[in-house]
Amino acid sequence: MSNIAINILIGIVVVIGFFIYWGKAEGWFKEGGFVYEWWHNKKNKKDK
Image 1 (cartoon, rainbow, N blue to C red):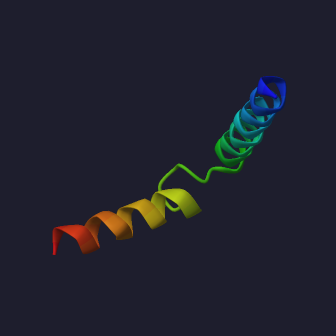
Image 2 (image 1 turned 45 degrees about the horizontal axis):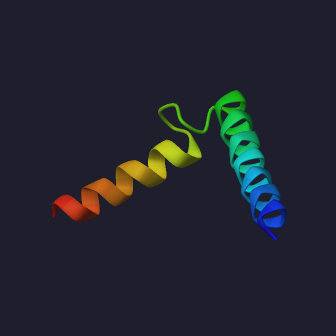
């Protein structure tokens, strides 16, 4: 039973890591990128 939980956890980490790598390669985290703009807008709404 614990092997299934460990495998699922490892799979989730691999998928998240893949999307972080892909996002960095596509420039999502740089100024003007998708994640950067979303985070900036979220932060501005919270400050208001």
